[in-house]
Image (cartoon, rainbow, N blue to C red):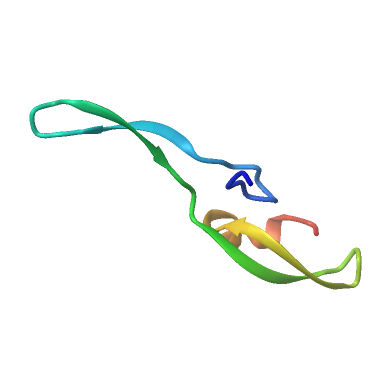
Length: 64
């Protein structure tokens, strides 16, 4: 399963790990995903979602 935020659709980023001798090796920078249970006003029930911490801070902006 893809590590992806269900609200913002953010996913992992590709980058390089650079050693002291400047040898580059590829690495993946994963997002910080958390399993949260939030109240949905549209569905009038609790729902479980995988959400990134950046979206948790601005959760009041999203209408779920």
